[in-house]
Length: 431
Image (cartoon, rainbow, N blue to C red; front, side, top):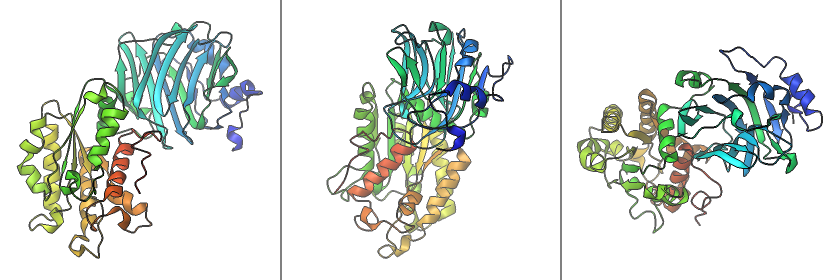
């Protein structure tokens, strides 16, 4: 552990004060607490900020923001917690539970609020999460985007006797040594006595999420049923080459409609991929392939046939993708588009599709231009195999086999933030 984060339980209060000497601000317009010196925690350490809890204890409205990166998958990891250490279960805690973002307030064993996302944030990447609370309700945010909301609301002032405040652990009389220790880096933790607006939350995030990723997260975290349309060509169709195993849309269906629990089993996932389809055909048949299903989210994986079709060069392909994205957004309810690149193919067997990398690049450019979530399978497959096409993932050198489809599903699951190592879909081993 680096010296900057050597905050052991013994003497932690003094060290926390020393680390925070330049990091706190009490101005009304700014945060009441702002600990902005990164600390590396190994699962047994924490940063004691109890000398600051008095400023936060009365708050019934406000915002908590934490920027962090995990280095392991723990069942429970505290980001910030204020508690009464003399009694059991009297605390306000922002933490990760199995990677999901959780916010809870308890007062002497009485649970005032306990909400948790289905989306997960223990992937080793840098995340900025926030909770905002006022009389209208509680909202959880990631990357500056709202991902969950409820009308229930409680904050520091609703938990009595708060005298302990820490990054990286929770403390109560049942756990005098602490519990829910964090493993990873907490870069910053700040608390305001007011609700930050959308632009302020984005400004607090070093790497703001796309608005569309926030919308997808909200759909995944909502109990309102949603319809997902997954469309494309034979790869999305999933026929023949899966050898009887599930295709990537089927893996996604299992992950959402079963593993995420009720009532997500009331979501619908519709695979409207058709073997031989091109971007031009998808534009022409958009009504029957997409519109007919009244979707909330539309995933598009297309391009493998475009490169082998006269008149569908990269620039026509680009125009078709833009048309598809904008057509999705123009549907009732403004569904969220997702672009998924084609996978690479075996150049020895399919020399006419060697230039598929250019189509994947064009799709990435369109995604950036249109602000669309981009699941880049092309780069993912190559980077996982030393820059070479992983032939073991292909059935005929072009179509993914059962292993290839699982790889596609894992990338989609990770990029849309519902990866869980304990999931049967995520941990599946295909022989």
